[in-house]
Length: 391
Ligand SMILES: Cc1cc2nc3c(=O)[nH]c(=O)nc-3n(C[C@H](O)[C@H](O)[C@H](O)COP(=O)(O)OP(=O)(O)OC[C@H]3O[C@@H](n4cnc5c(N)ncnc54)[C@H](O)[C@@H]3O)c2cc1C
Image (cartoon, rainbow, N blue to C red):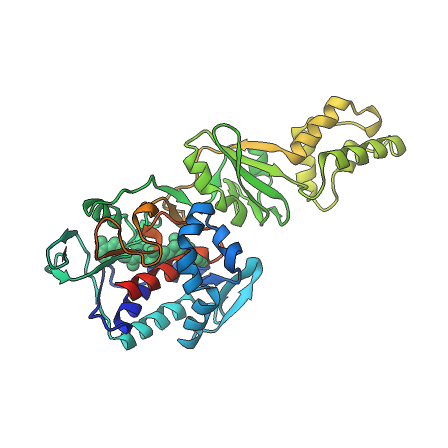
């Protein structure tokens, strides 16, 4: 929709083909029906959220349409936003529908023609440009913007059609994985902590070699099936990429070093030998978690009889607890797709294909994904706008 608005505003005769009868379905279900449209993060910090290479690719798009400009665009269209936790921006009305309605209003004003219930089934390059095949007949165009999204939540229309179209036009598609999804785990200790939310622990993904990849200090939610909440969901893409050989590592007290903790514990053992070992664990951790950590480290008894080996074991559980995670809950629960059209084949200043002049690719169809917090919409709107302006 953003690409079509910009193309039409730039004076191009624009037709937007949407397979669904309802446009913007993902916006409607986003952010729990409230739409976390963007973030208050900016500049290099914003770019870094997508990783080094993807952030570099997005630099031009994000700098030409940064979060404050996306905010101004949607606010001028009648939807004021407000900041909430984790630097997220939501409509004050708390209604994602308002965002879709605002986009539809802008689309109508721009003069772009919206055709709902027009699934694209094929795309061909011709001398004059492109011919798009649909069950309702062909559509010819000088330029073509593909914005068909990824593979996650297929019920919304995102079934990966764009990958096939792009391949047919000479593009490579990098391996795709579900990302931003809850993590199912079998460990009974996790299930037993159901309902606990840790606000300030650190959790990191590790790969098949055991190397840490992404670390997050955001809320972690324990559920009867595994791990959810922003931090574990942010790690789902890494877990999927490790194809059954990765997992997550907890650091329950990221602000305390191993040395500091050990020194404190030794001092406590000297002065309060009759206390139970559990008493050395930080009081801000929920009681149920403290019990669990002691169980996992087999730390029973009092501080006076605590052996060095046992102490090391509790330190390891507290600062470096590793949990194998084979996969995430998959595309039906993934907010975004990792992987997509190879960024090396797209000009980051225009979103034009380097393989097929006149073709533009934007949004989640690209090999771009960000963490939870409005980063995926921000990237989709910024690349969509650039594609619309450049086509
Ligand atoms: C449950 C959920 C919650 C989310 N919450 C947030 C959030 O709060 N903040 C955030 O930043 N991101 C969120 N995301 C991610 C965000 O929705 C996507 O990254 C974003 O929508 C991608 O935009 P897009 O335009 O590239 O693709 P999409 O929004 O998927 O749009 C693609 C469109 O193309 C249409 N289409 C596909 N194939 C064809 C075809 N062959 N012919 C015609 N039309 C076709 C589809 O029907 C669809 O309308 C969430 C995602 C999900 C699933």
